[in-house]
Amino acid sequence: MYNQSGSGMISPAVKNLLFANIAVFLLQFLAPALNETMVRLFGLIPLLAFNHYFIWQFVTYMFLHGGFSHIFFNMFALWMFGVGLEEIWGTKEFLKYYFSTGIAAGLCTALFSWGSIIPTIGASGAIYGILAAYALFFPDRYVYMYFLFPIKMKYLALILGALEFFSAYNQAQTGIAHAAHLGGMVVGFFYLRYKYRHSRIGQNFFRDIFRRNKPF
Image (cartoon, rainbow, N blue to C red; front, side, top):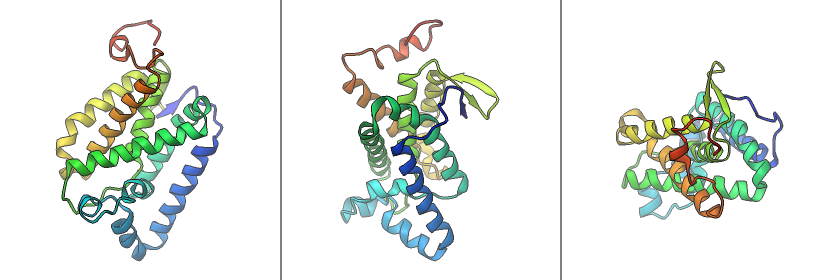
């Protein structure tokens, strides 16, 4: 995906999150013997998180990734959509939102797979929260999927949300934490609706999404 209206600059929180995620990934990649221990201690394992109070895993799982494509697309989306949000919110609010949606996404996937010993890793839950926020603030802004196909953010968010909803029940077979993705989007939506309850942010999203030439 490519955002035609991106500033091309990088904001402080996004920059620090990129550095942190890339640094951890390099450690995973360069020290494969250590990677297993890192995933076990810092990935999100519902059995450990709930039964043994490894509560830090609801944060640390966001900084581990399963491969190059996993981290690349997460970090690319963080840069493409996160910079614009941080510019209008400020660094403190952006980080608050990022970690709120990421932690909520972790809770959703842990509750969905209560008692599981299979680790969940990756920033995807928070990234889906960022996608939802970008769609609410810039619904008619175009992105280019695969750098070729233009689509408005509001339609992209709706499509992705629907796909995650229908895929969530099958996440154990696919190895993808669809519950985390969906949780990040849903929590992000209601977080922003509450925070901006006196504005039009999110109030008419599902009504306007089927109307043409209407402001958000």
